[in-house]
Amino acid sequence: MKNHFKYIQSPCYVLEEGKLIKNLELLHKIRKATGIKIILALKGYAMWSTFSLIKQYLDGAAASSLNEALLIYEEMGLKAHTYAPAFLPDEFQKIFSLSSHITFNSITQWKQYEHYFLNSEVKAGLRINPEYSEIKHDIYNPAINGSRLGIIKKHLPEKLPQGISGLHFHVMCEQDSYVFERVLREVEKAFSNYFSQIEWLNLGGGQLITHKDFNTKHLINVLNTFKNKYPWLELIMEPSEAIGWETGFLKATVLDIVENNGILTAILDVSFSAHMPDTLEMPYKPSIRGADSNNLYPYKYRMGGVTCLAGDYIGDYTFPEPLQIGDEIIFEDMIHYTMVKTTFFNGVKHPSIGIIKNDGTFQLIRKFNYLDYKNKLS
Ligand SMILES: Cc1ncc(COP(=O)(O)O)c(C=O)c1O
Image 1 (cartoon, rainbow, N blue to C red):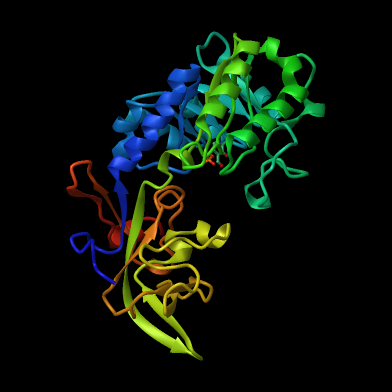
Image 2: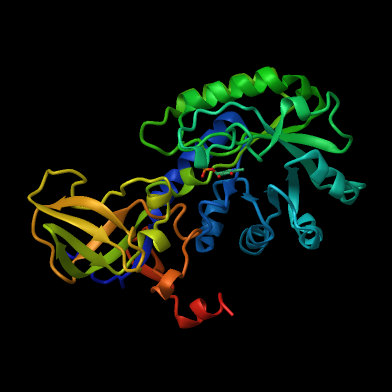
């Protein structure tokens, strides 16, 4: 394998700025064509060194905790659209001061905090659970039977509590405009009797708008049709993955190659468990640049993580040439739901974070050291 990124230290998450801008331009186009608000949900992408860039294209950001709301305020200079399954009493005052919209997961939560909203500009909403979703993996499905996320129709009073000005739903994951259309239809069927009582509707995330097969024209049509029907509603979409989708990679390096009963494992300086957790959680097999996920090439290897977890590996992959110690391995599409979910499990070295700028130069943004590990413990 050729080491194309020799000038980048290993391991390192590398954002390719030009690809991020391409995604942002598409989202900006949809905002312009529909008049809806599109905000970045921090849960999947919180690379704050790019927030000033993102702010040029989107309407703001969504938080699901005090830390995320603080980051939005500090690095975007904006108040957040905040939702959490429950708010911590000792954090709520601060969250309130950092938010433009706050969505509650239950009527009980709303009752606990409604007094904050008297004579205030901050908008309050309720998360509804449409009990409809086409997500195949239960772990990512907020609409499974018994879900704790959102209020189901039979629990919502016919007249919304005074002070509630919006509704919010989120029941999609990596899906297209046709799923979105069906979800919207179900929400409309079950909840349109509330639309005359609200001013804003948050459509959640999970629309993979920047995927190459996503039909943006269709999405624009669906949104405009809905908007024409309910012109008083401010519509908000809060994707995360669509912002970071295919905007960069994780550079790793082969440290050793071991063999056991014919299985060759390349031991890397990264971990699936600590640095690419979705690969084990979903699970899915990430693409490696220059390698094949099946049997296209003659040299077959399993990719092994550097932690002691027995299951910290993914394979097999085939390569056109035998791997050597020191070869770089480029895991594609490793910007979203990676940096926000990493751990210091086993104390293993945390990948650095860098950007290949639009002009081709590489900028190292952040390196991690022993104190980052130690300060997380006590
Ligand atoms: C409430 C809410 N909004 C937005 C998102 C972002 O979803 P995605 O990254 O799939 O676009 C999530 C993801 O879990 C979510 O729970």
